Length: 148
Image (cartoon, rainbow, N blue to C red; front, side, top):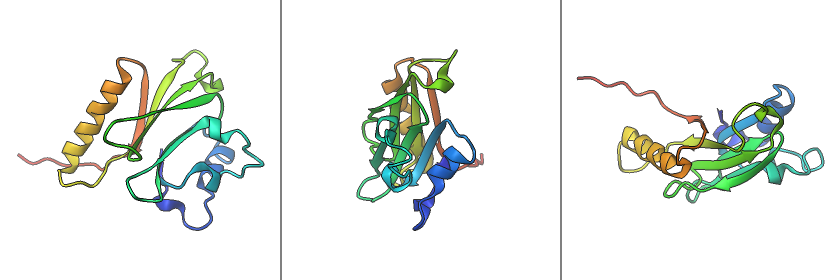
């Protein structure tokens, strides 16, 4: 999982994670859509292996990308672009594991409620969407300390 912080002007982060680090699954936040990160000639079917959505009115959002297999977007009500879900099937890295698998890329929104409340709400929504299926959740979670 990687918060790209919009990625600057070069947009090399996705390709570096896939090519240099051999990542099978990317869960990215504050990212532009995959065509801005993965050259279409080198990744002609990236659109079939990616789910991306803008976070609110921002040009950036969150994404799930699988190096292989196919990806079908799975919406998380009330958190479009902040939480992007995908059902991943037939990926080479899934051998012996759950197929299909639900993956969620999470970037907790800044709203009028506390951070903890937002994270609890988005995790509750993921639970409703998942309905007991196998899931992977990764993202930009900020540690919070509690005092009593």
